[in-house]
Length: 248
Image (cartoon, helix red, strand yellow):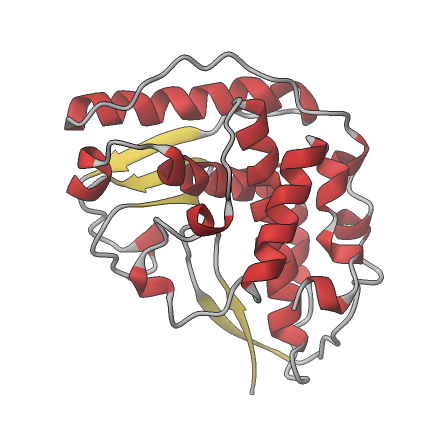
């Protein structure tokens, strides 16, 4: 039986389904929605003024998260045709698990789910004095929102399931590394900077995700995030045409 595992970035929803075709490793061929998406022709994402401070109370953190997503909507609005702003769904505990999958997470998380950024807001994020790693998680989830808005998510779902060595994992890496790259663009648009992004990319990743292999090598995650951050252009995030070594 061939298994195609689907997970959605920074948050992760995982679905298993069977297929009859196979997918090979290597750059994607025959899926223009992935390799030649109109998103890649857009210019630099504009910088946005997002004056927001995360306090250490539930109310202030909730206000902060809503404001951040509002700022991201403002930044990306003119980049995507027929853009529909992302909503925000914040709960202390997501009872049905991550995006209705039943996957339970003990701490806080941010994930894309049905046109909204779903946030499970726990004491870890509320009490955090620095918002930098939290913002990385939120912008990564927003990256998946961008993939959904532009047809990339649907096209990835439509790829045939594969059981060839590394085939399924590699194409999954392309999807999630692209979300990292788009997150880098968003962080630059918000005017954020860091001496070292590497530890921030996983600092707030829920421990429950450790058993999954969505992103591949840490060095490649850093490469794509920094590439998006440096360029500010979605065209820098075309992981679907990248060599296998860059998405391993």
